[in-house]
Amino acid sequence: MKRSFATIIIVLFLCLSAGTVFSEEMAKEGSNSGKVYWTGTFKVLAMGKTMAQMNYEAYGVNVSDTGKGLLHLASGHVLGAMFMVKGVYENDSGIIHYTRTDGDEIFLRYTTSGTMTKGGKGTATIVGGTGKFEGITGTAEFKRISLRPPEEGHFASFSISNISWKLP
Image (cartoon, rainbow, N blue to C red; front, top):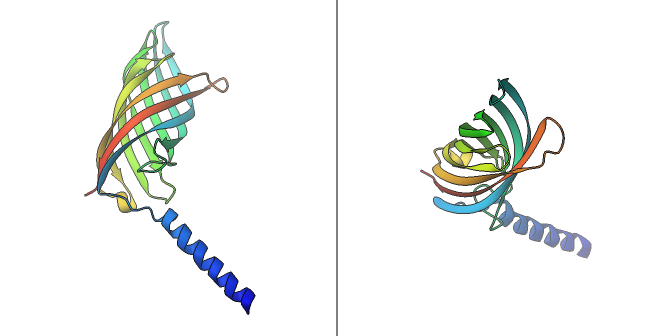
């Protein structure tokens, strides 16, 4: 009997403790900063020696500087495209589909300008979400830093970002 009572107490304590972790209350608006680490693949269509079109797909994870927030530990999926002249691109554009740890999703569109070897700067607009993020709006600014690719035909990068958002 004492063992059953102790087991019930422990289970109740764990459930109450876990509940606060899994039900983080989201404010109606906010902002935070963080980093996203990306890796992916690309296809290049060369146009002579100085121009090329590159289409890419990447996967990554967002880590907030505060250890919490809108996109902390959200996984990301990107589809993007850029037109380059002598390794310089302007208006690189694409979409980002984030999936949070609670399963809700947030969608962004972005544009970036920069160089292939160094990275670039860009802006993003939150265009929607699912679950408790339906109707979300917001903006982000980021800096993309290129890393050494893990293997031929792949790329790696990370982005340092600041994001502001608002729920309806």
